[in-house]
Image 1 (cartoon, rainbow, N blue to C red):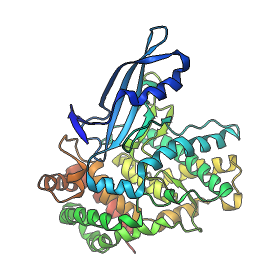
Image 2 (image 1 turned 60 degrees about the vertical axis):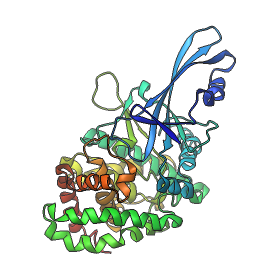
Image 3 (image 1 turned 60 degrees about the horizontal axis):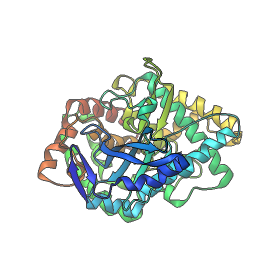
Image 4 (image 1 turned 90 degrees about the horizontal axis):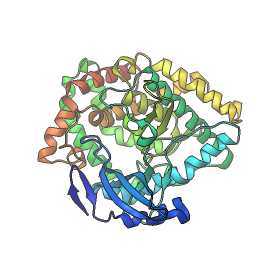
Length: 415
């Protein structure tokens, strides 16, 4: 399916002519043809285990013989059978295209209808590709970039994300209130019933390394028994979130909101972002907003503020959530109080364990060109060293020790 070119595997089907119709629509009668087509790695080595990310650079010739430079970001799957099986049964790439092409414009229009300009992400495009793909506007030339996942987000960046998350949750909850539930594929793309056996296999594989390294974590005596009790139940507990509790405050969650799936735009040399966009929306999920909040705050923030400022961050998010719900004319009687939001965070503390166990290991691992999805989720000779490194490196140990103690003190392991 792929041929290696440089540091990025290039799909054999990727050809310039796939973009002729798209560019013809963009330039109309002024379009003459594609002068050059250059795909290259879209991310640094060791930054993405699960998909191929490519930056596609095209020189477009116009009828007056001038040349315009155009670039897109293309995401497509690796040729790994277990992952492709998950894709087939969950339709993840089609879901993500639909979120960018249908869902985001609808939510942005709802804000326009009340006189507010809110943008959530890049433009998406469709081509006649023979494999799964997502094609997006390249945000790099517009001044967007990621924050280093190993550094984590500081106070300013964290607040930018929480404001955008509050806007997203507010408008999607309002949309559900006005129009009814989203289609079923937004309820459980991550944990489809047909994939439970495969997910349990992955959890069992990674769990061996996690439990093996547990004695390395500071204060493990306090939570060791609780972790050993939680580990065999975690898949069932996460599956339980497939059916939203109508008593919760539910919205369309991003589902995978962590540092590398967030882009910030800056003006000149200012360190403070002027815009925040979400990317990688292939795992949306209608459930309690507690899911996104716990996932993001425990998986993306700097160690120094991750737990010490947690309650402050929840208050900051809640303030913006209430503001935007009111703006969108959401029923005041259904608007969650700050106290109720905290009960949601306690109720779904299992998400924190899931983050410590699944998300933090690859996020906090030093970059390596050898890392790949196969070694991450299956038993392989090369993967043994990778998984041990993920669960035993100093950065991960520091974070997970604090998170597990914090979760234990909050009663998150009581299941």
